Image (cartoon, rainbow, N blue to C red; front, side, top):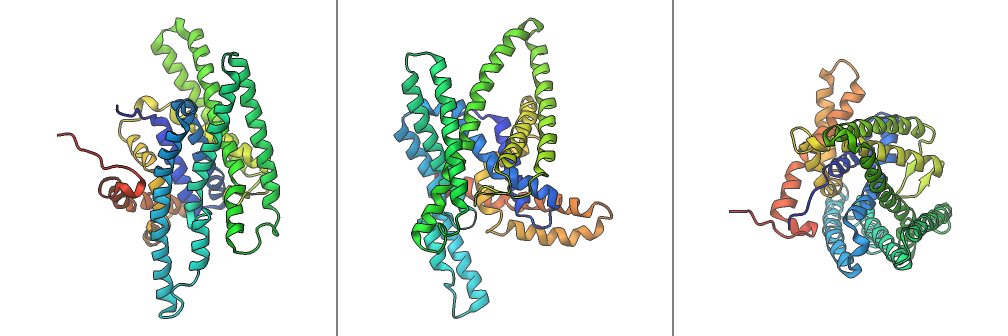
Length: 383
């Protein structure tokens, strides 16, 4: 059976991918870049939790789910680790030939084997382990509530959120210990891999349980508005989603300026609670706005972000180390001299669009020619 796409979440993943590109764009305005860095990775984890809730993954076999996710995540992890290693050797050869071409390879290998991940690859193990941990906790909660009603399940959900929040706090405190992460040996990188898992799982769990509450609220709202008729109800719902989403995005922009330091990879936050509030406000703000556009998601031009959302993992893996960002910056810096106003913002937009365009051949190769790199099978074209 053909898998049904949730278009507004595809578009949300495209927004997150664009935020990742902007976060890595050193020419972007500081305020915009700070907002993008707060949103980008956290948004992916929250969307992952929402997709888990919508697909009822806690009801499925853990072994099947784990094996499927492992193939879809660790196959590209292995391939792109190899690609990045070749790029590192090539750069060393250009700078230090003939000696020193393997400079930094010991650290690269340790990061790869410990699943700490070279460059942007750290998020792949984080996705896998955070999702598996959440599903395990959900299965445990589901078993407890079996035959005892919804109340026990909801109580278990809040316990899970509280537990993950507590573990995240301990992870943040542990991450501050320079002694704990000192050195470059395998165990230190391995510790760095797993110390961020509670926080990533916490974000995934928030996405999951907000979706559960969202579904319940939607049913109650539909019952109250049913007298207005389906068409009027749908329009009112879209308007409410858009208005609330814009309010949350504005609140995110204000809150984000209170704490400029936010890095999920290293668990570096100036103020974790304010950073978390900024993540949640921005993520759900964009999701609500995009949800209001769901009826038009398959039409031009909204089908464009949908396309990049479906290939957001590929965009994240290719945009920096395979040089689309570099080429987009070089071209945009040449063209920006012809723009007489708002140069920094126009330059940021040009670089973003440039990356998305230059990335298209990579997406085509990974989707059509070499899908096995992304852990997918070849698609059979209908005759």
